[in-house]
Amino acid sequence: MDIQSKCKLVLLSSVFLTSIQTSAVAQPWEFSSTVDDFADTSISIASTKTSDGKGMAFVRCNAKTKLEIVFADGQYMGTGKSLSVRYRIDKDEVVNQRWRPSTEGTSLFVGSSGKYPLARNLANGEKIIIEVKDYKGTPHKFSFALTGAKEPIRQVFDKCGIPFELPQIDGVKPDTMDYVNNFGPNSTSCTKQMLNTLGYRSADISEVKTDALYVALQNYINDKSKVCDGKTRTFETVFCSDPVGFASSLYGDAVKLDKTYKKTCSKRD
Image (cartoon, rainbow, N blue to C red; front, top):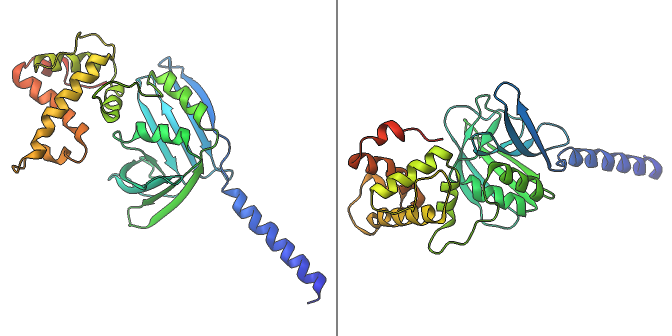
């Protein structure tokens, strides 16, 4: 093969490799809002997808004030049981979690306990790398560029009525704030009532998320967390590694003192 032919081969190989790399490049993040014509409710979405159309990521808020984060790489990963996931944004620490697959098994929903911090980190990062082990234990690794994600994600938070930047409230941890921010109107009012019943004054029983509510729930969590200091193990000690989980005991504790909560506060919104 002469030198001219070799040069042409190298050039073609370079073009081919470049096309492969480009196919995985994510498109810019965009914000969109749609309306359900049957329910007259809106859904706000910040999203991006790979240029080949197979991979996608979005942060979504529906009419029930629920934030969702979904990732997909276009491959089947399984259905039913949650899957082991690890991710890393830029040079931050690796985070290990379990995410729920969609009914089709091709996308993943971020768990409720980690979605708010993740959404904010997505907005402030440059790249996220995700590795998920499918139903066979086979790892799938994919990534998304985060450049330009901040404003679309901020708009989703605004539509959801969730603070994009958490307020500073003395003694209240970010996880507790995000736990409360996931409440709908009825859950907010019920949580205030139940905290009052248990002696943690939350000022009022309105559907508004107030500073007093955050403080009262944090105090409840702090008291429940004292079980972690003892040697006696109970079913609640599973929350010692993630104390905000103790908040899930609030309903049961309140019902012991006032059974009417079974009728008024048994369902969260």
